[in-house]
Length: 68
Image (cartoon, rainbow, N blue to C red):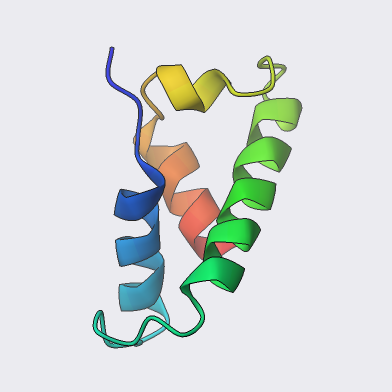
């Protein structure tokens, strides 16, 4: 299985927030928030920390993280 990359999630979050892809000033902040959301999702789904770093993320989880 391939993991869902943070870059993929970042791209989708920026689209959701209507932020131009070329605007990178807040990428570090947004990436940190994504990491927190992924950690929260792993905990709620009783997955080990870092689970989605090595496993596919279900579409519903991906969308929930984008919305968080």
